[in-house]
Figure 1: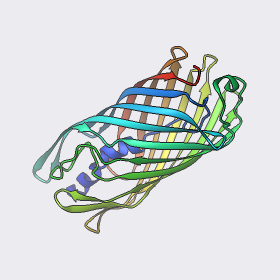
Figure 2 (figure 1 turned 30 degrees about the vertical axis):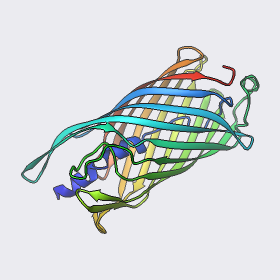
Figure 3 (figure 1 turned 90 degrees about the vertical axis):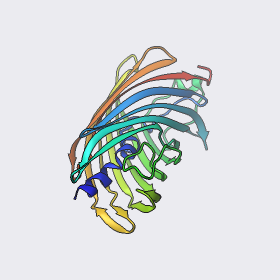
Figure 4 (figure 1 turned 135 degrees about the horizontal axis):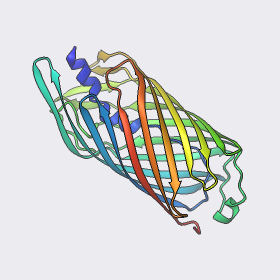
Length: 287
């Protein structure tokens, strides 16, 4: 049924932000360093295009003797596209604030909290870390529209991962669960609910002598069955995505990053291709 396809596509905006592949989520950095990142990304699914401009602020903190970080992502998005629901054309046109995401990460092993001077002698071996992210449903939402840039519900993402250094290489593996609250204003006063979505991701990263790095990325996720008013509208998802990340340090304060990913398998019709570019500025901690 077409209505099922549109209900699946309604999660396109949320999925593009929530399940994007992130290399170096578990790494060490000097305590007190701050990062501010500004970037633009575009995701396409069929005739639909989601363009997102975002600002991300991160601070490296001491968590019981290991390094951690706290960050907030504030996205602004434009969504456009045209599809059909039976004989009726459905146009998607939305612009505004998307749901901000707050994330707290803590390394549990192998990433001691170090000053900038101490960090100069640090050599990574094995790092094990964990994180918890949550979205704030402040994004623009119209209950009469199928597709929006805001989700009108929250997600909570606990995760755990590890990073192993092998010479100039880093091998990373992580697992995550995405837990959703209900949207009680879906297409009017309907209640939209969803089972947790489970994912695992892997990264193979190579560091060049100038500390630029190139990463090959992969993510697999499954689950996330959806319901409207308690009635199932779609089965569990199963998706594979592959991508790459390249980061180049312009100087000790600035770097530029390019990202790209593409779905290679999906049992739904909501797969998408994404490209992004961002600029990062670092300060604090004696830098």
